[in-house]
Image 1 (cartoon, one colour):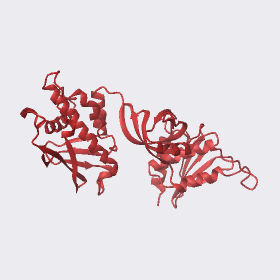
Image 2 (cartoon, helix red, strand yellow; image 1 turned 45 degrees about the horizontal axis):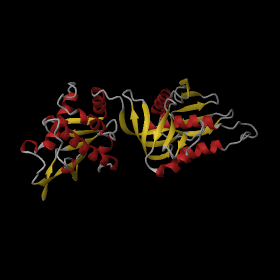
Image 3 (spheres, rainbow, N blue to C red; image 1 turned 180 degrees about the horizontal axis):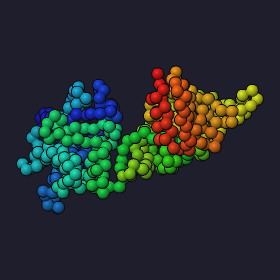
Image 4 (cartoon, rainbow, N blue to C red; image 1 turned 90 degrees about the horizontal axis):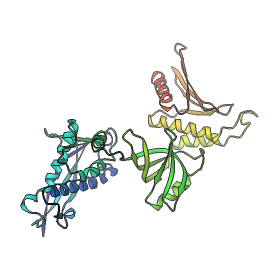
Length: 375
């Protein structure tokens, strides 16, 4: 049978990674999710117009195939084409364009959701799960424009996905994300592990599908708070209020901090009592884990690398010195954070005390001080 290619809608990827040339490899999986979504919607439409006893034609899903034929410039513009087999003996005349119809139904559902009208009653319920799965690799600032440049343009983003979850009364939200925390248990036989999240200190169940990650998980495993903090690129299940419920799969694992930062913490970990001319307490690994977590928050906020020093009483001090002023953060052995900034121009001072888990407040203080005194 002969086949040809036909354009299947138009996309434009915008925001975040898509403002740079090229298509991130991580997004390729979204094309497969979109293909499955179109098939699920088309199947649902077929069932709506046929009797309950009728089954969808054999080869229904395999008769629909999308190909990425080009990537054009202008943010990122993927060109999708549908492979069409002729003659198409699967469908009666009324169903011949059912996949194109499914594409329009998806876009109309997005338009309805964005207008706060909810999911249309005609949208197949059986496709809602795939609908909410599509786009899970999008960052918070990234989105897809369907039919970009036309009056019918609609947007798909993580916020729209959450609306789909809410309107469909789905309690779990699947998303690819980077999680920081500690591996505190591992069962290679069950392919599960326990992961203590840096934010909130909650321990969640994790799963993995590939045996290749077992060695990496074991490398960072510690059954106590002494476990090193790592970043896991994972498929996670999130609640509607952004709480992590569990990790569905592990895509990759890596140390959380840049080498220069983690190497410096390793040096402090190696200090023995008496390191300062016979004085000076050693820094506990528990405190270093707290420092590591604070530095991770700084890293996420793109705060520049601080000078890192041990204090005589067993704490750790972070410093950002500038010609016009300085900012310091001292993490004490009792896990308090003493934040301090000083202006060399007018002797103005500012200081606050936090618990080390008050990451937002600590980071905000440091960013404000650096913004004021940085050269």
